[in-house]
Length: 410
Image 1 (spheres, rainbow, N blue to C red):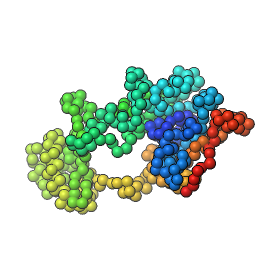
Image 2: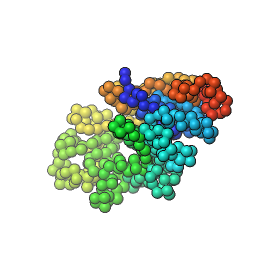
Image 3: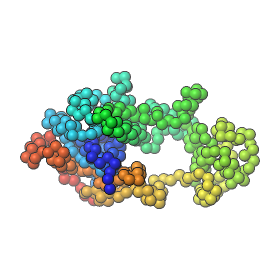
Image 4: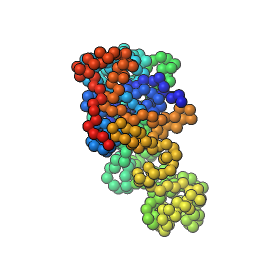
């Protein structure tokens, strides 16, 4: 089967999460992704959980983000290492990195230098506040939790009246990584028309601010400073988690028809005529009162009993799955969203699959994450045309490092 990005070569200078997320999706779609790692490897190779013994090639964190890629270890502190990188850039289509702004410039690989090496190159950089920010912002060290806090996301997350709460996954990294994919694909399409590459300047704070939904509009239009609402929605009611006899259930009655149907299911037709709840706007204004009323009704049955009723009546609902429940849910298997990869020296590992379900060229998990330096010799030989003697000399000088033997096996 043809791949959507077959023939596109990506120079991946990423680490940990934001940019590795970008290059993972590009690799899933068929791009050749060459992960250029320092001699100690991507930092995330040190992150658990580990499959078997702690080892740079056994990190479940790294394995889950670097499938379908190749690993080339270059010592960029040596000039010969930099020259190899320059050759790769001349032969590449996309370069992706998530260093702090100015890092690539100091190494001699800023945007102007890259344009001279390859005018068709698309250079995507992801940072906390963006390269084109005032210097005092651009140079700030940033992690996901910093972006979540600065963007305003943490101020609207968590229980009512509770402390600031981080979203349970690193959405600052993940969203900025996915947005970079959009930018890169747009730049590739533009290059087809013009022959010119572009610089993509991604910001984790920008990425999160852009997805704050109605929170921004609520402030800019009404002057209201939104706070955390727990499981409730700021603009749609009822649209939240309710306590049942044994656990919780999500009920999402997003329009007046569903609201009326829910009232009849609960044998509370009186609520349909209640002036406090006559429209979505009024229900949202009186959300706390309505939530107490509905909780009083829903707590009479178990979550399983309500699910059976809501399923028959076509009310939008969900149980709140934990990781065991969602990983074993049949829809995840049906959609190939949990796949097995045979990881060398480790064995079979289950990781999340690709969510890009195209009819002709879907994203696919075909290869495991690379061992550190696994493809160093292959890349130098097939991409740059180096012979065995030259490769051997580079290894001897410590410029290139080939995969070291694994320290353990499963």
